[in-house]
Length: 245
Image (cartoon, rainbow, N blue to C red):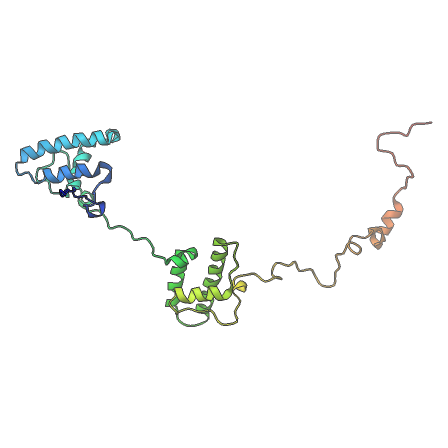
């Protein structure tokens, strides 16, 4: 059998990172190749043509004031500042233009088994581990455990979670540095007392429907007023006379 020569496949993981993704990898390859040309006049002509191609790829850049000088800056940055030609008149590089791409911000790493607690739990646990021993640290641990149970119930409303499970998870995540005291109920942490919002009534007074608001005519100060009022068996509205029958 004849041996078949397969073409070498270039994987993305083996490629060089793209400096400005909006222009694509081919623009970067062209500028990298042009940067190796020793003839500066020839290099300038090639860069001018590449910038025209960059305008075709991103036509919206025409809406930017002085867009061609910005494209020259982009070309230098895409080539890794390896172009040897002098930039055109009016193209001035600031320190920010010469600055390399900032390092990527690392995403918080959370173990897969405890992602439902969120990243903030790890920050709280880290802070609690740095606290000195005492009542404040105990209160902090209790608050973390209460929040963990709330987060678990929010994440999984159908299944019941016990206090022991939360305590074990807290010990595992904190690597054995934090633990909830035995016999403590996590449900009680951070919950208001049943009597905290109860309305308090003055002692010695009854506000029942049978006692408060009784007929005030029984009061002595109202007795004389009631006597002086005229009584009508069939009252008539003011301004109207009762018709004679």
